[in-house]
Length: 486
Image (cartoon, rainbow, N blue to C red):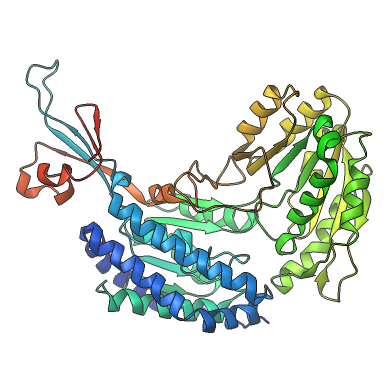
């Protein structure tokens, strides 16, 4: 069920932006303990209202209460992770070079750190109404970096967006954060105006290539261009070797079907293109599992309408055949589909065969030689993930080299649709997967919303607290090129 969004007026946006600008110095100056307490307060408030929020989300997104409740846990976990990132302190990249008059040329005292960029715009995603929405990873990392956030609500879950923003905003203020710490705007026009507003200093986005590229161009075309961190589209290639099919083909087929149908195929890490050895029988194995796979309703009416068009686009290529379809779906729902083609066709027509199709579909690409495989892999656009299923006897170094160039995360076991929220995660990849080299998931997502500042020969009383010697001894830092960890 979709509720029509209102549109935030220019006057309302200006007021929200002014409040965010006033809050920014307070967030930037807040010490680690204070900022971490604000993040934990937001997490606690979401947990306390989980039942209410899950009910609203289920009505708007069709994702089911069990999935949504787990996503609330992921969302509050992200907020708490960033609280520990703030407290640990290495994200600040504190670096000191003491003055050295004997150096050539003489060296002044230099003290470097990262500081928040200022108010950040966040654009919510449709497929994760909690974890990539109002209080999701972009918002959590921007707040942790010391920046107020203005979120553009997604049209697929407007009531949830409004309620989540109200809960989190109130929790932040009640915990001592300033008014203007978190705000919400609604409507496409307001989103366009938000990314161009002079108060906004960076933007985070998860969504379609078309929508993301339009916002990216707006951000870049400002009189003062700002960084735009967009996650736009990904086919997430998988390579399966003949030896892997021989050793565990049935398990791989079952795993693939489970992965590309998870969440009705609406995960940004869905394995959309799978390179399989010709004549190994893998297509038949996949068909055996796919025919019993269930589909379901998609997130929005717009996505529901686009899915069959995407299938038709792929089937329009003369090389494409239908391998299997899942269980019949109710009207308005998506039925899982497995398609097949060959590596030569992919290499020749990547603009058709390698276009992301959002929903429960995957394309099996047959290859009969290493040369065919490599030519087709080179045509694959940048992706969030790449997966290699091989055996120890396989020579796969050259394949791995290509996959590493093409993706931000390379898997050697399992399937890519699970994204752990950790310090070491990388959720990003070459264009068009993302518009930058940064991750949108995990601890280092905070780096997107920070900028470096160096203080040269500054009196200690005017230095930020974290750059003073007494505080430095309690934080990870580098001094005169030596890394020091408390």
